[in-house]
Image (cartoon, rainbow, N blue to C red; front, side, top):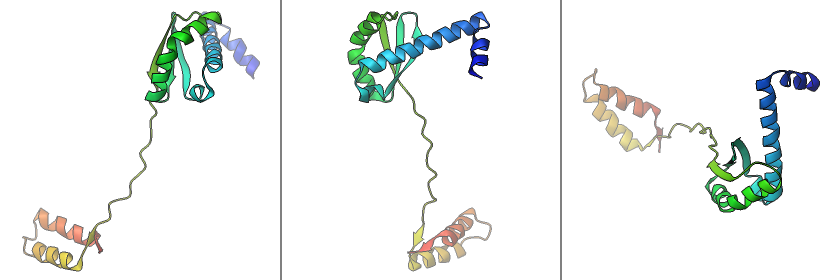
Length: 144
């Protein structure tokens, strides 16, 4: 299966350039992992190489700040490894988090409060939106 993919990727100019770019990015990632501490390497990755500028993605602001501090040294180390990097740009990776579904708020009313709201809602006209809302509140609330 992988031979078929390699044959397909090598079949056109655009795909060949894409394959070469992907291989270059993999090599850059390997060099990056060799020249930064393991804790920092786990929190960043190579995003792209634009001309002679390497773009790195950091998992947060602290990692980005640290990478920016060592960016000149990293550029030198990439150049020493024979990779065409003159500058390093650092961007913070946006990690989308799914908000946990919050349970509906629990409404608690004392018995006196429930009676007071019920008395007030009964004094309102039958077609009053406020009366309907109060009756819904009373029905959904728990005794507290």
